[in-house]
Image (tube, rainbow, N blue to C red; front, side, top):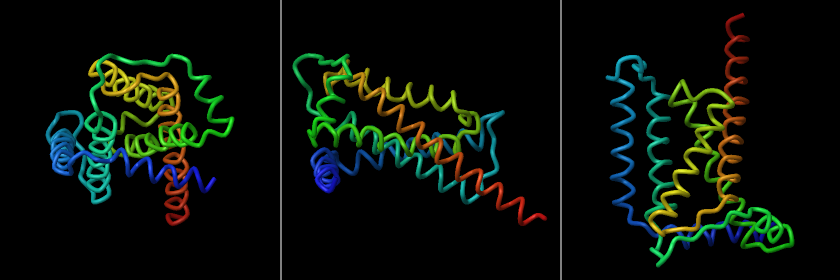
Length: 189
């Protein structure tokens, strides 16, 4: 287990080489679009509380990091590559290959913040099937762009793990949200 944790840190250190300037520009654009939508678009106006501002900034930071890690920080290959068999990857990881296990864990963990932040930032994203579709759709978009730009391997296992991560994040959100509602009810009695 310690080897897998060390591999995760090494993996992140190796893949995280895109310039901070690019990340900041992406974050600024996403934050602007989010706050513009919240404040000015009819039907989506929301009162900006401190918590919502923090969640919006965290969402913008998160999206900028995912874009950087999955799309901007890649070397272009000469041809598109894909792997449509997830069972081999799981089998190899379960046979003790810590590199494959690290990649599986990282792909799950990478989408956990999506499942937490989406329903906070976007009211319409609150729902099990909605988050399932959002998680799958975001993962599919990343994998498709990687395939089209030849900057990564389109893998079914990534779609599964990213979607799983989004759903774990959403379940964590629901647990925390339920605890907050219960706490509010107790205080109001």
